[in-house]
Length: 168
Image (tube, rainbow, N blue to C red; front, side):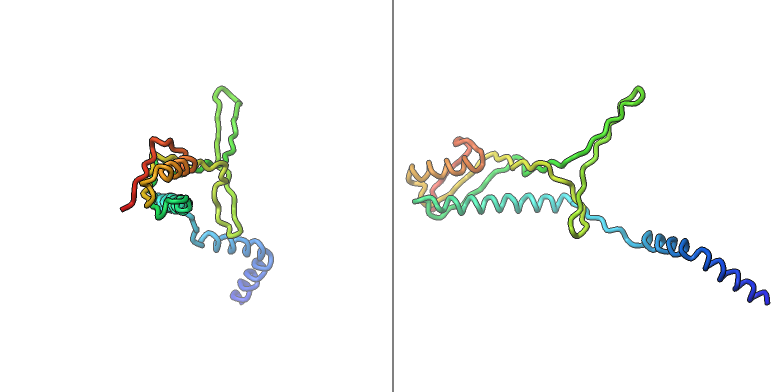
C-alpha cells in the first residue's frame, strides 16, 4: 500500500513539473556537449601568409613572362611585413563618476556554417624590402627597364630596391 502511495505521488509530481524537468534535462545535455572552438594558431597564420606571398610571386612571374623579350622569369620578393588585417571594433565609453571607463570589442560575424570570425574593416597589403628578378632577356636594357617598372608598380618598391639579373 505504501509503495502504491509513493508511486502516485511521483506520478503527480512528474505530471505537474514535466515541462520544467524537460527543460532542465535539455540544459544538462547541452552543458555536457563538448564545446567546439575554432582556434587560429600562429602556424596556420604563418602558412596563410606564406601562401599569399607565394601566390603574389607566381602572379608577378606570370606577368613578367609576358614582357616582350623577357623569356623565362623567376621572382623572389623580400617581405618586411606581411598582409595586415584590421578588424572592426565597437567601443563604449562610460563617463559616469570620476573615472572614465572604455570598453572595446571586436565585431564578430557568423557564416552559414555558424563559424564566427572578426569583421574585417581593412586589409593592408604586404610591405616589401626588395625584389630579385632573374630572366633570360636581362642582357637587354629595354627588358631590364620594363621588368623594373612592372615590379615597382606592383610592389611599391623603388627602382633602387629591384635587381634584374640574366638567367644562365
